[in-house]
Every structure is written in structure tokens, then in C-alpha cells.
Amino acid sequence: MKTLIKNGTVVTGGKSFRADVLVSGETIERVGTDLCTEADRVIDAEGCYVMAGFIDTHTHFDLDLGTTVTADNFPTGTRAAVAGGTTTVLDFATQDRGMTMQEALDLWHKKAEGSSCNYGFHMAVSEWNGDRIAEIRPMVDQGVTSFKMYMVYDSMRVDDGAMYDALKRTADLGCIIGVHCENYYLLQQKIRECREAGLTGPTAHPLSRPDIVEGEAVGRLMRIAQLAGTPAWVVHLSTEAGLEEARRAKARGQEIYLETCPQYLVLDDSCFSEPDGAKYVMSPPPRKKADQDALLDALGKDEIDFIGTDHCSFTMEQKALGKDDFTKIPNGGAGTQNRAQLVHTAAVRTGRITIEQMAELLSGNAAKVFGMYPKKGLIAEGSDADIVIFDPAAEETISYRTNLHNCDNSPYEGMHTVGKARDVLLNGELVVQNGTVIRTGTGRFVFRGKSLRPNR
Image (cartoon, rainbow, N blue to C red):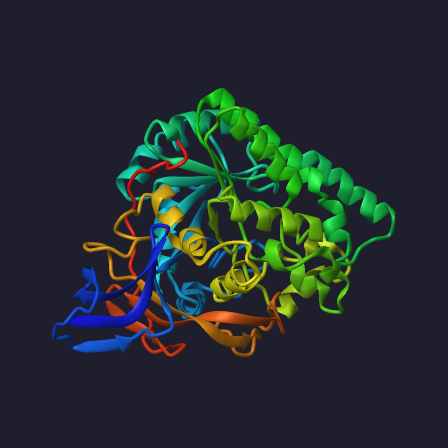
């Protein structure tokens, strides 16, 4: 089947230009002006941007925390994702202690059945020993070329020596490791201080995780990676303190990759004082307005590489598990559907970044770092026909009532946005039309190669 997208402005590879895009089957066949050809379907993109399908670098669907399970599984979460223009999510297959990486990968493949966008996996590693080391090569052979480690959470954290060894061993195979950077011991002490002061509600959450808790940990990761001679990837960067540590590492000549999320661009810590403040409990938490400004400035300077969402949704009933103890509130919020419209509103329309930068932050850079480029992340002949037609004038007020995630709340409830995915092609098929999901369950596993390490 052939689809012709006409009259749009193609935004890809750091450039914008008027062109038509001809899709044949699952592949982009031609990109050019005034393509005159017979097509089975013609889509008029007048007034819209034609962009490579967005890649959400950070989701947690169907994640079991022991006390509760995320509200969104893969079918519901990916349906919300594709509605917002995301054609590929990278979720975290979690290797719990006592479990092999292979068992985790097999489990996540099963969880992902019925997905409505394409998907790949980072392997989240909770322990580092000879058995886990022996599994790195088999993971690479199965298209999993990125890993994650935590500096916090009793069930997941690894020590600095293990992280150093893991960075070295995975980099040798063209892989990259993302790290959740918070100082575990400072965090535990700050939690004790909050409790001793009688602070038990949501407002205590950001107090227990001040910017220095992230900044110190980012700086420590930078030094560990420097010693290992490997790239360092910081997931969900939220503070100016962490950003400054990454800048110091770059100034030393280190290879750094930074991810942030929309919540750190549009929310601040005043949200925890709202009556439903528990819905904002996520780690890291929304920060100060000065941190927002620093991150937006860094986006404009191309110092941040990609924007994920850390979509990890819970209902208000689930959030109420911590009504008497903020540390028991399940951490996370819903956001995968709203990423592009929030970034466009908060960063493009305000002049902090260009539309070309937005395309790279939401797609192109991630495709390069995570071994999918140029098949994904690019509008070009031979690339996969994962395409978003983005209407920069479309206005919407975000609400959980109209979002497709399986959750009775949104951290962005009531926010007015300008700019939205109008139509989406997934593997060459039209799956979103005029903002409505018209086809579900056709997502596929994305087998990824080595990181291209564009910041090398």
C-alpha cells in the first residue's frame, strides 16, 4: 500500500523544508517536492510538520512494586503513547534480585503483547556478579543494547564498584548504561529528618530529595565513568545542580548523555501543596522554578540529548497507600501521551528551542544513542515509515478524562497546550487520524544495534 503525505513541512535531521513524503508498505520510498504519483491514500499535511515518529526513552508499564502494580500495562500505556505521536517506547525490563536477565526479558516480551506502538527494552539490573556479567552478550544478541542501574531503592541499588565494572564491560560491546542518580544515604537521613519534624504528607517528598541529593550523585557518576573511560548517561535529570556536574564532566572531555522529562520543565514543587498533591510524588520530584529555567536553557544549547517521560502511573487509590507516610506513596505519574504537546508549548512556542531541536529531542537523538538510526528518528528514503503529522496550532486542555492512559489523574491536569499530534503512521499504517486512535495492537519489538554514541 502506498501513502502520500502532501503539503507539509518536513522536520528532520536538524532541518525543515517543504516536501511530500511517499510511503510504500512499511518504508519511506521518496521525499521530494510535488511528488506526482498514484497512491492508495493521500494525507494533506498543510500547515503541519511531518516528523519522524517520537521515541519515548523512559517508560514503566506493568511494573510490579511489590505493594502495587502500575495502573498502565503495555496495551493501555502504548495506546496513550501513540495518541501523542510516540511510535516507539523504550521500557525497562527489570531484573529483580534472584532473577536472570533472560527471565526478565522473556517476562517483558510477554507483557508487551498487544502494544499499540513499537517497543524496545532497557535492561534494569539489580545485582552485578559473574552470572549477570555472562548475560550481557546474550542480551546484545537479542537486541537489548542499553542497561540501567540505580543508586537508590533497597531492592535495586548497586554499589559504585559494581557500577564501574558494569560501565566498562557493557561499553566494550557498544552498549550504554543509564543511571538513576540520587545519594542513597543522604536521602535516608533527610527522610528521617522529615519524620522527626512531623512531616508525613506529600510536601515532605521534595524536602527529602533536595537538589544536592541529585547533584552529588550525578557528580559521582561522572567520576566513575571517567575512571572507567566510558560514556555516562543520566536518566530523568531534574536539577541545575546535576546539570552543572554534567557540564564539568563535559569540560573535562567526557562523553555525556542527558535525559530530562516534561515534569521538570512545566511543574515546580509548589504542586505538592495542592489537595491532590500525592499524584505529583515521583522521583526525582518536580523542582524549583530556577531548575526549570536552567533545564530549558540547556535544551536550547543542545546540552540535553533527549526527553523521555518516566511514565509510571498510579490511581489516586493507589497513591493513598501513603496517606500517613509519604515514603509509601507509589512513585510516578502518567505522561507519555502529553510529552510532545508540553514540549512544544513550554519550549518551542516560548522560543527556548526550535522546532528542529524538538524533533531531535523527541526522536532523532534517541534513535542514534539507542541503536535505531537511521531506520528510526529520520524522515528519509529507506527509513521506517513511523511518521507524525504534528499540528502546531491545535489547542487542548489536558485532562485524565480525555487522555487514554488507565489512570484517574494527570500531573498536567488543566494545562492548556498548543500543538498536538494529528495523524500517526506506525510501520506504514495509519493508526491515529485527526487525533483519534483508529488502530491498536500492531506494535512490534524493535531489535536495536550498538549505540552510535553521537557525543563521542
